[in-house]
Image 1: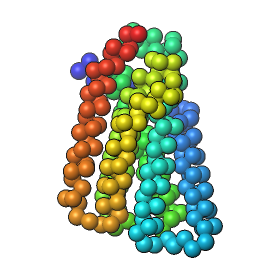
Image 2 (image 1 turned 120 degrees about the vertical axis):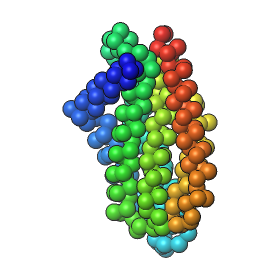
Image 3 (image 1 turned 120 degrees about the horizontal axis):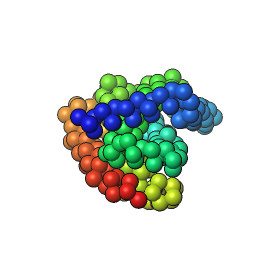
Length: 228
């Protein structure tokens, strides 16, 4: 119960600070909208590019997840970077490390889910809607937002204890995020083609398992990092 109360209070603090400044949300939203608009202009300037067919669906899908990936990095990489040493020391005296990493993870999941929904909305406004199963594609976006949030929050916590080394974050996240992206692309492609949902349950289960493992690893490792 104590862990829940601490996590809830820290989560409210994260939401309140973001509501006041809107630094992460506005910055990433600007990135998403501008990137989608640039892609739209590029496609329309490309002679012979047809917004239909399998090739267009593949480009549509892969490009969306590339935008989501870099939006996640921009939004979540600063999770611990923006915390001053004095504030971290204050957290150390009032909350457990598990509550801190859980609150950061939940906050990033909420932030990325909102940005994912907005990104998909903007994406569909600029490009032709080729979704065979829109509801299932929406579910894959939410699942992708959760996956990106859990992975990058844990990696951000580790990198923060190594001087916020961006290279270290890239190296540590690469072996985890690549299989996640591949499964998300396959899962969302099934949604675009409108295939039977049961064919995607395996990928959904694998993504949920990866998220569970990452969260469990963060809860086990972060207390040791926190002591340093």
